[in-house]
Length: 133
Figure (tube, one colour):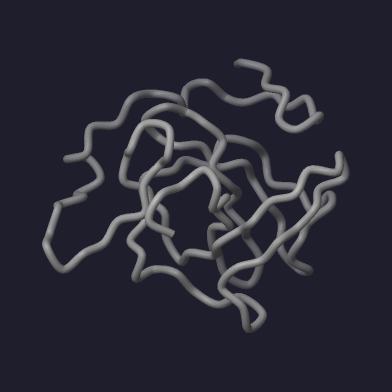
């Protein structure tokens, strides 16, 4: 178990999730017809651009968290290059009816967004932490 301070909130994260993942494990083949959104830190493939989706009629948002930090969020149906590492909570959720869990890059373990779970699941990824959004 490790402890992380993410934007002024102390969280315990199960470190068994934080293991390097080989791209073959994710079946992430580099096809010429696929455009990948990548982690800006390590260039790991995070999500297919084609998996960008609209939630509440928009595919991107700007939100401010309780600590006053602004985030530009892009919504994706799937993000196989990320891993959700915290318990789900509805505290300060930006999407009514959805609980969230912190999502990290599977390769470098940087915070890249959140997995939201409600009537369905989607990823809210931090656009400034990604390239190709």
